[in-house]
Image 1 (cartoon, rainbow, N blue to C red):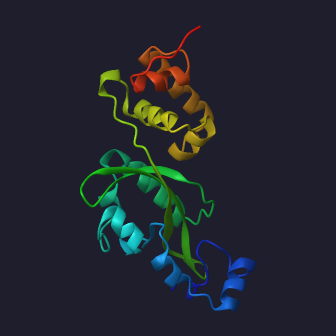
Image 2 (cartoon, rainbow, N blue to C red):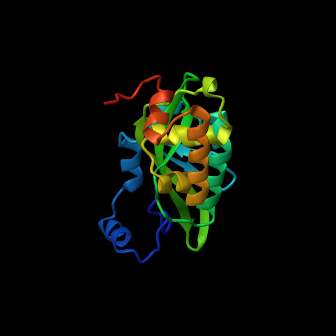
Image 3 (cartoon, rainbow, N blue to C red):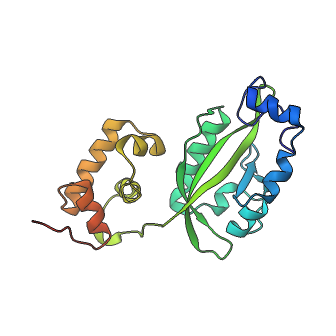
Length: 206
């Protein structure tokens, strides 16, 4: 299926891809049966293919805009990530995103995606769900800004400053400033304390 096109986010002379072609491997058939949610989105943002594992996660969403299965507060960031992939950014980094599943529930996942290419042209985005996460709950009682809420959500998932900067497409210094303001807003003295407060926990003191 996918080896018929020159590459998935890779140059045509990459040895692993050439080796697979030499084996005449049915990678597309394998992706249909692997128990890892996988998908292809075309350049207009329409979901063109999902495997059965993805269908079990989000329902039968082929033909729909990918943003229709992304939680509303995640839509802007998901579009930014998708746009970077269409520009040919082949760096595959796991990105946390909240999806709306087939029962209209919410599920937090790690998604790894790369541009899908034909020759020199990007014809879409191929991705897989690399992990299903425990979804941090919203915290309206903390009275923080939407950006601070995004930062807090990522802190709850154990993200470092650099990882937050990468996911939110911000500089490290901007992320540090958001964290400082977040700590002040929630009355915490450390990131760990901020996460504990968000979870309704208290830190043991000695």
